[in-house]
Amino acid sequence: MEVFRICKEEYSGLIKASGSANRWNVQGHNVIYAGSSRSLSTLELVVRRASIIPVLNYKVMVISVPDDDNIITQVHSSGLPQNWRTLAAYSRLQEIGSKWYTTRKTLILKVPSAVIPFEYNYVLNSEHPDFNLNVKLVRIEDYFWDKRLL
Image (cartoon, rainbow, N blue to C red; front, side, top):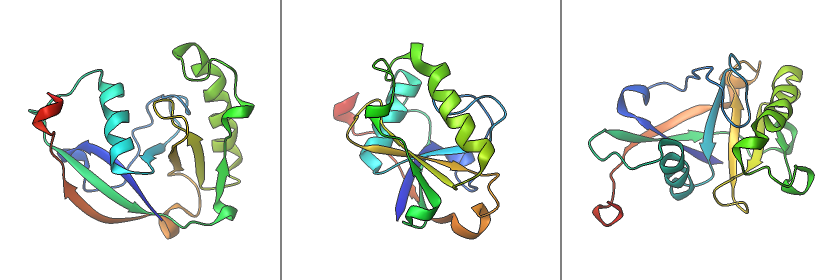
């Protein structure tokens, strides 16, 4: 399956994790976030940046990962705290992500999007032993902001 990551042009050539803390990981855990579609990835970027910055050059990274239940752990929103979409729940979600990351049971954590709860984001563990074998950068696409959004 293909997943999508939108990033600044300077970071688009390699599938590399920053180790920065986010909703599903703590500082130092090297994970890569990707969306199930270009449109979801766009909304996630807008929310993360809290704005649209059209002067920056962005690219879409199209990443291929196996669509195999053996390498994916899915988090269902029904098992999350009621406030899971808020900043207040970050520590609980990071605990879930940290447990997944450190056990290395699967390469991918499939999580509900906090922006569109019935769609999914994928968290890729770049330290997992199967990462280099199963995660491939298929292509890099130009990205543009539709002027109607601005």
